[in-house]
Length: 93
Image (cartoon, rainbow, N blue to C red; front, side, top):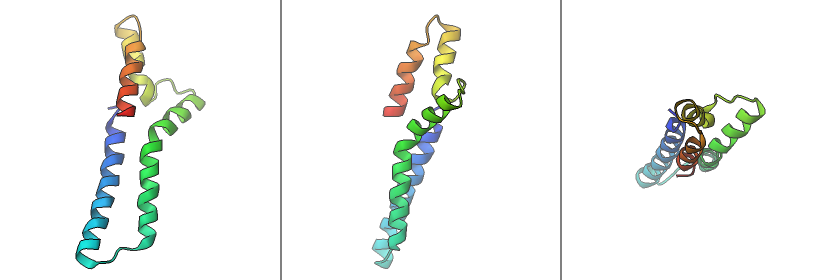
């Protein structure tokens, strides 16, 4: 599915945050280096959809994740514009 990657990235990010909170509560210590790792995972989680569409456009992979709904709506209906709106909604929210 199109939104699976975003859900998994978000779940990993929140899991890392939860682990850091539990470590701080139970051990009163968490490695400072891992805070940087969690920060970069968060940045990647936000940037991943944009990087995916940029790389799909560069590689001219018009069957990539961000183009699947457009292609499906253009085959089943006369216009794929609805697919663009749905994809933007999924990516932004």
